[in-house]
Image (cartoon, rainbow, N blue to C red; front, side, top):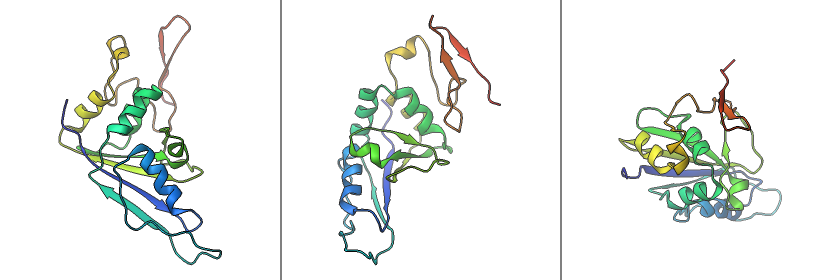
Length: 174
């Protein structure tokens, strides 16, 4: 397998949020995440501003296992590659879903309850790594690559679906 990318994970703890709960959500997906600036819970009225928790060099292992367990590898390939720029990409994960040990991708145009976790990935062979990391046996029947004709659209809508006989039907973007 291609070498794993350099991964930076961050989340923003807003004044109304409990810092430890936000950290707990990140740790469910990226257990080696560490931050020493987790805000303490304050009595109302809270006087602190937003606090960014950031950790570089995070392992993708648990994240990838969760994707496999949830059977969302094709969705992950599409979501991770939506903001692909040469050898780097960024994507968002729902912090609320993460608290339950689930990965739910959030589009940048969406507002989500409970905040987001931002993941930045960078390496020379990022496209190859993403395709290998999300590979599954179904791709023997329906091959997938980054930005292929089966990729979801930037608004998250599906580019295809399968009829009851298993035949792919393609729709075009409006």
